[in-house]
Image (cartoon, rainbow, N blue to C red; front, top):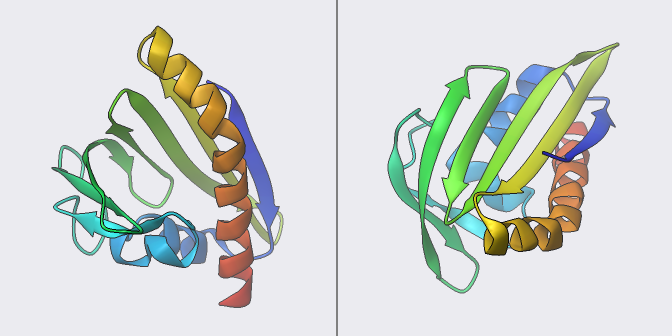
Length: 131
């Protein structure tokens, strides 16, 4: 699974609060408005619901695993996306990865990968702004 990593000046706790709370996803992910049924206030392992995109499109999603304060991953269609944060010096390191579950989804993952990198950078920027 290719990983997009970004160093961030904000502490891991601040990055986690943005990343793991569906109601805040729209602050750093340009195409996401929020989520339904994926956990409150943070993502919940095993939760099934929808990611809500700008424009109102709702895609079925499932939270695959959660390591509180460290990482969470989810399945949206045939894409598996992992969001991680860890301490790095005085700040943190954000890592996002995406992979497909089959040949067509692997192509979709490769196409989506640059967007995942952009999303990681946006998350860092918002976390640093909120510091």
